[in-house]
Structure formats: C-alpha cells, structure tokens
Image (cartoon, rainbow, N blue to C red; front, side):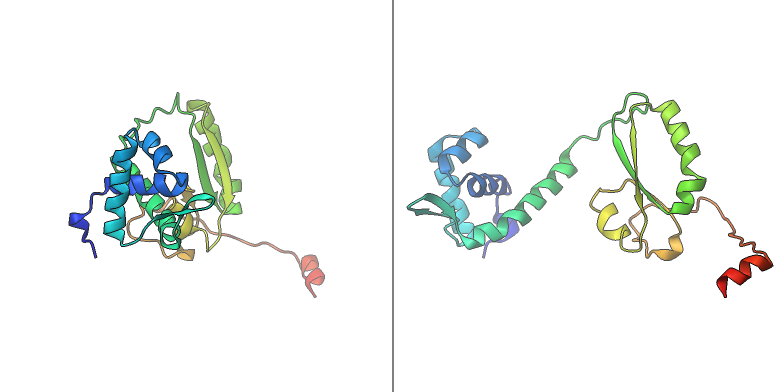
Length: 187
C-alpha cells in the first residue's frame, strides 16, 4: 500500500481525466502532456493503486470497478484542494452579481427580510437573494456544502457545529391574543 508521502497528488487529476475520458490520448490532450507521458502516468497510478484502472475491451477502454468507485471521492478531493488554493475574490457589494441563499423561518421572513432586502437592494443592486425554508434537517448538510450562505433562525432548534460562526441577533417574545368567541371555534 502506498503512503501519502510517497504519492504525487498530481496523479489524482490524471486519474480523473483517464477515468472520465476512457482514453489515454484524450486524457493526455486535456492535461497538455504527450500520450507517452500519460501512459507513464497511468503506469504509476496502476502501481500505486494496485489496479489496472483502465482495461481494453471490444468497445474501447473501460474503467475497472475500483476506478469507478474511486472517481467521486477523487473529484471531491480535487474540488476541496481547489477551494484551498483559489485566491479569494475581494467582495465589492456595489458591483457583485453573486447569488446568496438565506435559510430562515417564516417568522423571520415576515419580520426582518423585507427591511434587509430593501437595504441590500439599495447598496447592491445586482445581488440575488434566494430564500429557503428553515428546517431541523437543513443546517449541517447544506451550510457545510456551501448551498446556504446565511441562516437566520432559532438556534435552540439546532446543534450548531463549533466551526460555524454564529451569534444572537435579537430577543423576541411571541404573544397570542384570543377572545372568548375564538374559544368556541376550538371546541
């Protein structure tokens, strides 16, 4: 088994291209290297992974079951590496055309969002705001996968992970007022 310190991580990009293209020549073109160089890369990958990765068949090259199983984890790893090395863009509200997704409760949507969107539109006319309903199942899987930019809700509902920045926005009391005639409808 290959240890990470002995593995060239650049091979993962070549692996992705080889499995997706199912061709050494096409993968070489996309990686801007020669076909013999890509064949050498494939040989290295085969040794490191102890798997043929691509096998010849009557219909052309086909990824092995192990190569197919590794493709998604490799793609996820490459995306993560890209996020790490990408230079962050400087944010300019006046010229930004970003899309922000806010997850919130219907209560917050009615009380805070009208004024918030008015302020955003005045300072950032090209920004899109999309609202998603807030639910107990929403927080962990989506905010950590970058689907949601902001959650405004009741933190008592969620177990907020420690790496997510959060704070108290305001205190509020919900009051219910009813009359005796209203009680008759509930009987």
